[in-house]
Image 1 (cartoon, helix red, strand yellow):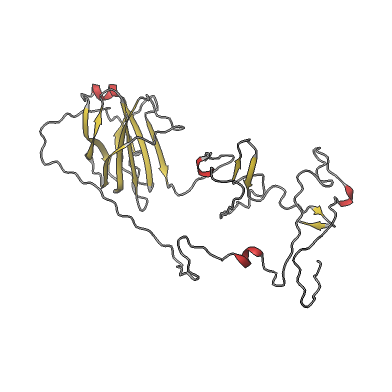
Image 2 (cartoon, helix red, strand yellow):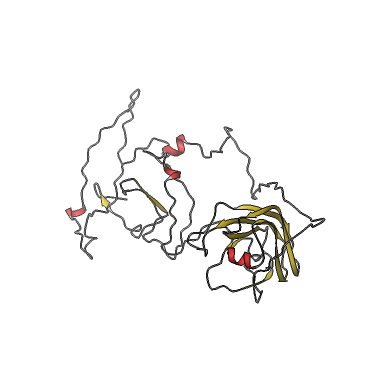
Length: 328
């Protein structure tokens, strides 16, 4: 450590420093397996020189506030030990038919099997989609026009389904693909906290779906419950092709196993240029780390990696010699 002299009335504004970088004993590691720890190599880390004032306070801590609250310029903030919650008000639709002038009812399937897939309240959140072909609808006696409700046959009713939604859309696909699910173009037709009962349950639409009579139709069910409950078992049929998709679980996080990744695209990063600040909280598995890994990384237009954030790397416990025998 080099101490600056204490000279009354004299301040230091610019420091010129010259020192030599070296590999210990002048050894350089060749790019040969088993010989990469001889000396310096292409993956050696940068040597840094730190200049500290008498307070020995990191510059970030000295100049940056400890907390920033978006939308507030206060110098002190109140906090709670217990988590807070935000409540949202939703307008739901409870439709009751008082009279029926005419109606066509079409039955699809025989109900020879059972499933909990669309209303499995053992999960707090669930979304499922089912494809009904135009041939199935026509064979059932339906024709182009408004579809005003859907009935499900329940053999064993479970917990109430909060914020149960039904959405529908036309589709020219003959099967559903888990790798490319339909997520756009749906029309919401039903939204209500619903308690299913044993037997026939009619979900009356507040917004009838106008079927064009020629396209297939995707029907989507979803709900969000405050706690996990008991699934409702409904009568169903087994199809040879992929006519249904189910996404079940608690959508609070992404779980990556092995070398999984998500590609985010360019839209969210188009305004980045020369500088970027990244902060995140993460806890690595001590039984696996250190290991070669990446939390996320990004490439530029030339396909050159510009940023890489990772957990402890495979060589994190290695001390590299640099400078005058210093270590990092």
